[in-house]
Length: 224
Image (cartoon, rainbow, N blue to C red; front, side, top):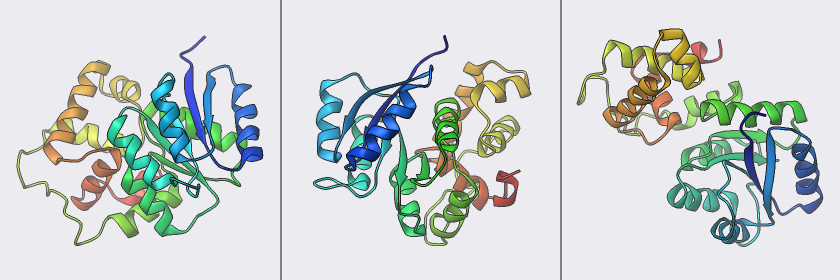
């Protein structure tokens, strides 16, 4: 059996949360390790249980909402990936969650298949942005007043790093990049870390914004 993806659910709608948990538990490669009814309970449970690989986070919750909970998780548990699962599809909500560190954004009316695809892609690649989310990234997060390092500011990227940056933006996994470029996964990981350091980006969405603003890729290319 392949590695099991450990999931935590945070949603105040119990019936919906239980339904998601039931669906996910039927998958051989997924284990729901705990559920929380709001952000405060989530933070407490994180201190008391095994750390999950992925948290599926509702946006609107009492006591501590999904945005604030995501900020805390990103600060205290940087290796945990947060997928926003919400009924709010307003562009500002999407931009806010991605900006604070969510690695994907899924609507509650999505299909089970799409949710499973998102979970598996996030586990494999580290993030998963569909076309709608990429448009929001372009419109809201790539702004003239948002400081992003230019390609001529600081250390120059090598030809290999630019190659890898373009493949990261197209949501290739580390293994897929390694296979495509005939490199080891460890070497690809080293290049990815160098990209984050040189561009001063904190995460994958930062690298995407850097790549678009510096004309390494276009938003149209990302959905190809």
